[in-house]
Length: 433
Image (cartoon, rainbow, N blue to C red):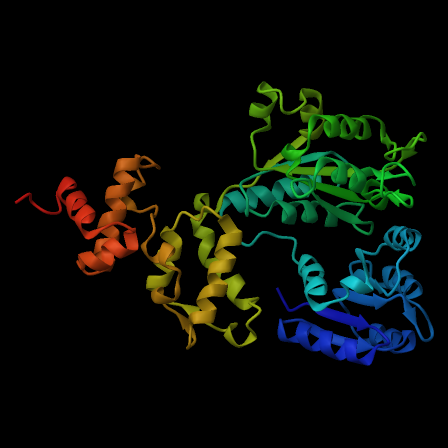
């Protein structure tokens, strides 16, 4: 995947220079403009993946440029920037195809980088394993439909990426893709975020608030960690799925929306149903088309490709040509990756920081990966070890890495030398005296 080409349009020269420089250092190809006229000139000669547009420019509104961009380059994602936002402006911007709408309080490099990171132009999983090929086929089959999708998988496997890929390959691709983290908000706040509220609906509701289902109208809403929503909120969500309507908190009027729902979970919804924690009717409404993303440990053949991908797209520009030694790659391939692809990405960043030359060595990897439990030859036949077998295997491996030095091994294991000595006796590494 080539670098992301980004257009930054803002009339504040200092803002353009500071943000543009930071985004360039993190790997984006940035062009900037201070007026609509300058921006139009760049758009005639360049193709951009992302455009960051100020709402108020000396010669017009960023909303006008948004419409022009969506006409000539529908795949370009647009984030609008403004000093003073109103709900009506935000709704209008999202309706016209803006990906997001940031107020001046949010106009900082971290917020912009987080939004741009979500707009990586690739919607394909990195890898060539059978599991990845099957996943791509499922995405391609369900994307053109309007079916509700339930994405399942452990934390860090890329559930949001799959949801985004489905949206981008669907007829709704030019409309909003709205992400909701159901685990991060209290029930009342989540209800207000999803459905909005009327002025005076509760203490502190000083004005009308449009909900994210309204923002996502004609587009897609991604409900991440759907298993975390409470039973009362499950009822309201079920109504939207069944009727396409909802009421704002404190409201009496039904609001109709056309929204595709994609949900994701790392929990067993079936088990929650048996325990009464998740509604059966909602489960069947969500589980129209299920996609399960395999954990990284089940597609270890993809690890070298993922490592190469993360190095090439690292925020450390000077290290993007680095290679990985055979010994380091063996350690990466044997590690079980409980944090999945997200953990691997962080590990590569860690290694690149420690790497002085142009090659990642085994010593540049975190201790837990150099010394940690792995899927080695001894457990390939059964797939899993008992707790006792895993402990024996780990102790032997740490001792081997420490070249038999028991004091160092005990320190790594977090036990005393005496305890290590006793354990070595128990596993037959040392004969009792």
